[in-house]
Length: 155
Image (cartoon, rainbow, N blue to C red; front, side, top):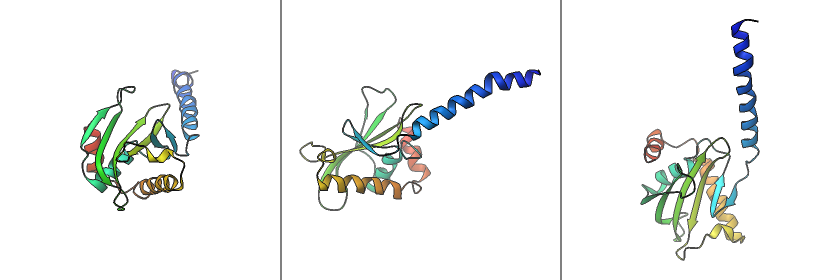
């Protein structure tokens, strides 16, 4: 057996097998979920999708905070955002994670009383959740490169 074949069998083949397993386990989680007051959307191209969407729709964020549990995760925060043009103002926090185990973009919003309206289970919460998901999907391929770079460079 040649060195080349031995190299392929011992090095490249295990990597291919592991990468197939990882991608299949990531793709199993595709339905959006609410976890820890975040709407997590898994069917994405970049963990920065929610942040880029807010940047392009509502301008630059007011603050950036580090997640206390995940070292590389940042939250971009906008205050007093009229999300749907209905006069209701929210504080919005976006983030996301791209690891071997998790791959999602997240968005959280809080009303003027600090409540997370997406977890109430009411029809208005469902409509708001569906609105956010559809807006992110509509704008998925519209994000400008300079917006992605601005977010990336803020880490």
